Length: 193
Image (cartoon, rainbow, N blue to C red):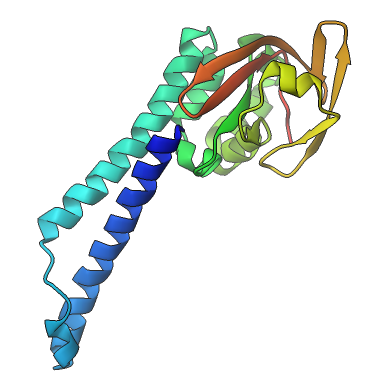
């Protein structure tokens, strides 16, 4: 996510938290007969609902934006997985590098493995985190590294042979696709945890 987008999301989350706390605290203080209830301003429940709705829409939009960028580059299978999760759970407030498996990579899964993956949102998050790095790393920068650590905590070796860059057991086949908040490198396999 861009710095501005991250700032806006953090700001909206702080407003939501503050408003929700005020909505919870004011009635509790008033019920106790506390004089502190006068210090806390009343909050319109509609305002809380509007802020929460705005944050949810923003998170949904981030998932849609990344999924659309993947689709625009012919990556239907991984785009479908990204749409099933909250991208904010994957990327936090950081810029990111995403190793997006091409559609052929998914053919390496047998029917049972594919069904297990698709039926478990937690497993989808784990797999996607293993394809994700904190920070934006271009192909040129990647080629100068010995290893990278995924958001799943795995250390993957980076090897370069001529123009071929490998991360773990996969090869980068298309590099440096700009997306909101990061960069995508298309790879020819899955980085399963």
